[in-house]
Each structure stands twice: as C-alpha cells, then as structure tokens.
Length: 102
Image 1 (cartoon, helix red, strand yellow):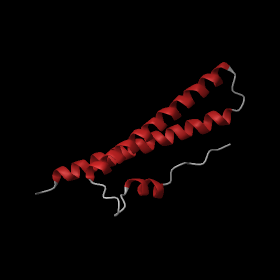
Image 2: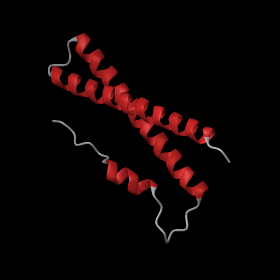
Image 3: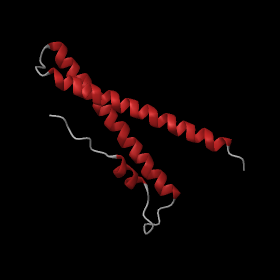
C-alpha cells in the first residue's frame, strides 16, 4: 500500500512561520528551521536505509513483491532530489544576500 505523503507545503510553512502572539525571535525561528532540516535529513536517511534493506531482500530472493522496492526507491530518489533543490535554493539566497549593497 502506498503511504500518504506526510508533509504538505502548507503545513511546512505553518510550522516555520511564527504567530504574532508567540513573540518568537530570529534565534527561535532559526532553531525551529534547523530542527526541521535535521528531521528532514533523518527521514531521508531512514528512507535510504529502507531501500537498502529491501534491495538486499530482493537480491537474496526473500522479497516477493517487487513493487515495494520500486516505490521505496522512487520515494528515496524524490527525497534526495528535493534535498538537492532546497540546498541549491539556500545557496542562491545566501549568494544574493552577499551581493546586496548596504
């Protein structure tokens, strides 16, 4: 069975953007974003480990449903591609900030 994608873009933005009443400062927001990135990287590593385990089972002949391996592999590939794109955007934003005139 295909798992539902757990995080939609709207919920990700809501988790990062502070409410007006909370009084979160830049440091708190940075910590929240850092923990979000750490969780995302942990999920990516977990997905890669699942693919590796399924791949080993397939090679040994223990995996009877090959579509599980295909789905897990595609999830891991998409997660890696998303991570690379986010990294590229962050680097571009940093370079744009460095080019700003004060």
